[in-house]
Length: 270
Image (cartoon, rainbow, N blue to C red):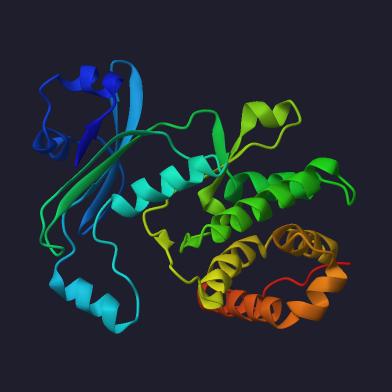
């Protein structure tokens, strides 16, 4: 599989090959043993490139022994982006994708996406916004509902993100200034499709959102609004049918907070 969008092909060379893309380098954002994420500027346009260079059999067996599906290539993210765009979740725009090799331990792949401009991660935006927002702020409610709707839409397609922290939700600042909530969901390389989506995977995603929001001045009403939006049901229904589910989400989020911050999370106000 090898695909380059016309503008990217022209910016490189009409004869660009898979190997040419794997030789590219630029400003590094993340580099681990088998994955490199960086940006390049071509014809005055910025692209983000994520290269995968094979995880090795040791990593594959380690993940399988932990009952986890190993991420072998950029295919996960390429597929997840396609699904997101088809179901109305704003995400990255693919400019190129390629995968080479049959051996799952050594196959190489890449994903090229357009740069998102004028955006800010919720991890940076939310503390500033929530500190200023009033209890009945319409935009505050709209922001909470938008995050919940993205999670609901993704899970309805039997897809889990597996890194669903608020740092992976990005807000369009220009639209925000006009009173509109426009969120992107990014970093989908660990996203997985499940034939049967078990609740423990859903709980992990929702606990990640909850954990990464615990330092925000959220109220119990804010939490209830998120749950009502996610289930599309009133709180009374949730308390009757999904109370244990949300207790487990909270328990897992608190456990992660203890592990990362070595202290108790802040309590929510009424």
